[in-house]
Image 1 (tube, rainbow, N blue to C red):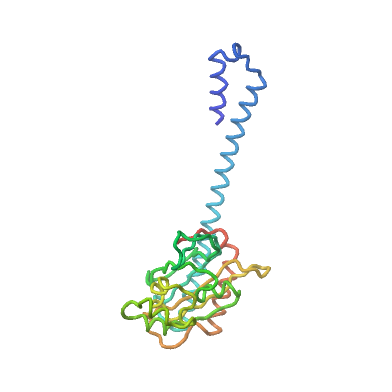
Image 2 (image 1 turned 135 degrees about the vertical axis):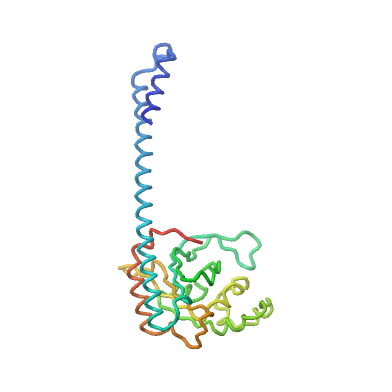
Length: 253
């Protein structure tokens, strides 16, 4: 930018504009100052961008480490192969949300977006659900700022065979649908036997995100294991550890 300022002044002089067009020294001064200010602003933005990137990377590493330790600790506590456990962190954000009944592209709405996901095995895959306050354990946790445990074995068993038809879905109770729409239910119902959602609260008690633990249906565990006070304690401590770092993270899906 400093070079450009010099070129701007030099061009005016070389073209004879300094004399023939009678550009005042004041104009030349402000041209130079403008380029210098733009240069300083660009450099400042670059430094700020680098700082934010560094802070985000550091925050992501800390959150990943905390969630990994949480998963390992829970696996040991409940005596389940950690390959079947998953842990995620979510924060609120505004996104375009399209419902089953929507004709258009959708409407902007506040949803929870995932910023961290950790599994030793990369299955089940993410379900691409618009997580509003009315959907599942994660949504209810967001709406109430309370820990929510949701057993899903019944849904998983019912949906383990051929894809459920829309008519069959409509006949399910609201409790079994758990706030999910038909297309979302098809993607999620067969995957998990349990989900535990824990609020991530600021020091002032405001909800800044949600931490979730899930047990895959493939674990073949026939009893609830994520509903114990010990598991709740591990998840709650993890939520406290990551609360200040979540704001630095970007959505991953």
